[in-house]
Amino acid sequence: MKIYREKDVDSFALAGREVAVIGYGNQGKAQAMNLRDSGVKVVIALREGSERMKTATRDGFRVGKIEDVVGRVHVIAMLIPDEFHMDVWNKYLKGRLREKAMVVFASTVAVHFEGMNFDSNIDVVLVGPMGPGDALRSEYRAGRGLPAKVSVMQDASGRALDMCLAYAGALGCARVGCIETTFKTEAELDLFSEQVVLCGGIPYLALRAFEVLIEKGYPPEQAYIETVQEIRAIADLMFRYGIDGMRRRISTTALYGGKVAGESLIDDEVRDKMLSLLESIRSGRFYKKFKGERPVNRQELEAIPDDMREAREKVSKLFISDVDRLFGR
Ligand SMILES: NC(=O)c1ccc[n+]([C@@H]2O[C@H](COP(=O)([O-])OP(=O)(O)OC[C@H]3O[C@@H](n4cnc5c(N)ncnc54)[C@H](OP(=O)(O)O)[C@@H]3O)[C@@H](O)[C@H]2O)c1
Image 1: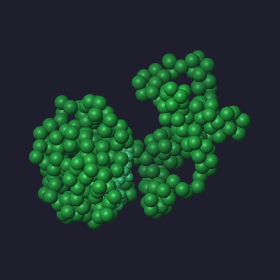
Image 2 (image 1 turned 90 degrees about the vertical axis):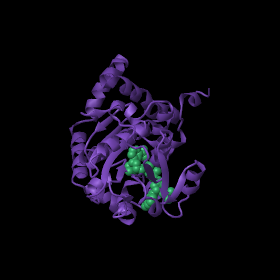
Image 3 (image 1 turned 180 degrees about the horizontal axis):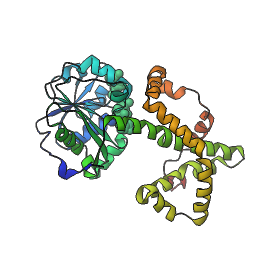
Image 4 (image 1 turned 135 degrees about the horizontal axis):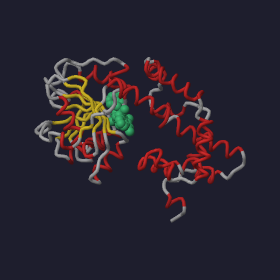
């Protein structure tokens, strides 16, 4: 695995270049702020009527409409939800960018699964920070960084990798490391890990366990602590020491019980379901369904009924964001 670090970054590659950040949400705001603090000239590009024009202006950025900005800058970061990448590319960017401009994506999902094509005179790259905007910003401010995935899909300038790494460097990601990947691998792995482990597997496992304990009459607060709150301690151990390192640091009862229950819960049936999810992702069926069925906004998406809704609502009421609050300190 190729990992780029600060020594690989030509920090002058972005000198004198202006970056247009399209979107001022989770990633857009954090990336724009990190770029600016790294000395990069930034303009925020939003669709007409965006409420966030005011916020970005209040945060000290120059702001413009997407169509007025993208043709004059050197770098365009596409930091809007994946399902709108194709529309925004076709509507505002296609055929309008400067020669050898660079378009940066933070996710390759739409590019890969919608088979997006780009003007041949531009660079197209991925700089995908491995974490949400909040963490990208707070790590940067603490003098650290989040790692990122990087890839060059199209290199018209002959300098796309240098520019891509300079962009990642300005986000603070090269302080930790930038992992080289491809658009295809990144798109498939991204969806698989979200569905099977991070946003599907872990939360739904916790909710199901919570539901079982409530059903059997345990106090909700304690059920919550055991099934949700304690995930953090184990995740921290896995993050710091790896899975074996975590296992060395837990009690013998937990080690034995975890092995017996883990093997029985995560059995061949689960493995087959994982394979079938992977197949649906790789074939493009998942993305097609997502684009076809996805409601127009996040509120509508969240309102779709699901089996775990009741447990989720109970768990949300019990949400305790940190240990100090939990113990009333
Ligand atoms: N969230 C993460 O943790 C994370 C991590 C790594 C990578 N990524 C990737 O980063 C990219 C941005 O994700 P995000 O979570 O930051 O998105 P987000 O917060 O939902 O983005 C909101 C911004 O997108 C703009 N927008 C939405 N639809 C638009 C449209 N049709 N035309 C023009 N602008 C539109 C919004 O404009 P208005 O202001 O007008 O509403 C707003 O400024 C995605 O590719 C995502 O996969 C996200």
